[in-house]
Length: 225
Image (tube, rainbow, N blue to C red; front, side, top):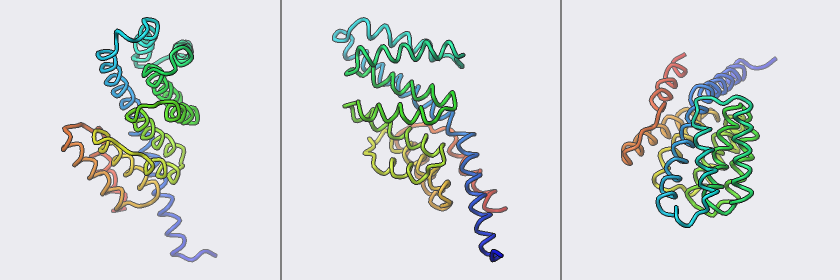
């Protein structure tokens, strides 16, 4: 018969896993979509400004169509199929351009929206392997860690996160994801510290991170119960 202390430890682990899953369902999935949309918009705007003349008209038109299509609040099956067709065309015909990298990020976001996290993981890994742009690889790595966490692979997510060389602009997001991972691993003190660090870094870089305070607030009642 299990010892009482062992039973308490099992219950604590179950509670921590349940808390991590609540965080994923309540915060991570919508945040993931928002990060990718914002990052895609930022990269695409600078790329458009700097390289419009040197890029093919076909690639830019395809990418504009993809953005217009995926900017909708929700896509039905036919919309997702249309988006995937455009993504495939961009990556096949313009695979060495930033358009192809960004199309891969959008593919990952669509997979998350469809609750197909293995497909999102494959898309993000493809971007990391194919892109020669440090910022894109870092962004894809952050989102890969989040998707791995969403599949209850916290140790793998931590390994992914620790392998990244993040630019300063992504340091707050990296700290937030670390907090999510630490909570999933049952390290509540480390989770709180990472999330507070994310808040501080976001202020330092004049950024906004949605949901951080909610995560910190959600942690306290769990510890009191």
